[in-house]
Length: 156
Image 1: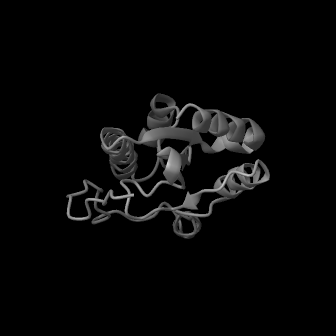
Image 2: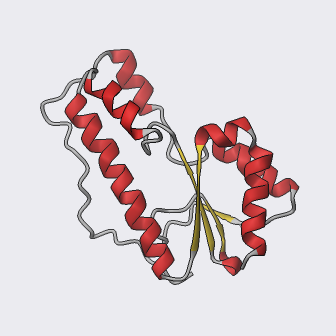
Image 3: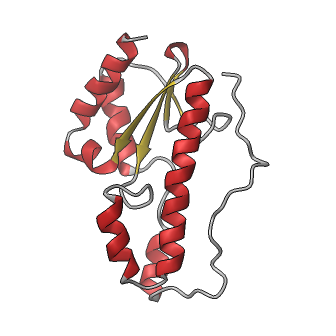
């Protein structure tokens, strides 16, 4: 794996300047969100392990730090959280527009979506196949998602 993340690349993450949390509980809740080893990632990795599939996790030198990587198959898997990665973006955007710190959250999630597309493109240009799966789909049926990934490995 010779890919490197572009750490010097400017990220358009919105600033918190001038914004306050909607509540202390809200602030605490958001701080506790994990960026790796989330519940849905662990569920999926367990199923992949049961299928005797071996992988690397959270490979930092690859664009986007894929959650699961199969180096020999050049397959990268991202387990995207529904909120942070903008699943069902149109209804979510309408809901966020009515809430606290709307400008920040709209910009933050839109930037995440754009970053995800950029990282997927960078990986594909480097010859990698990319599978992105949603948090709720994994939680609903981790075995089904693991089978989808196993099928993707066979297509190499």
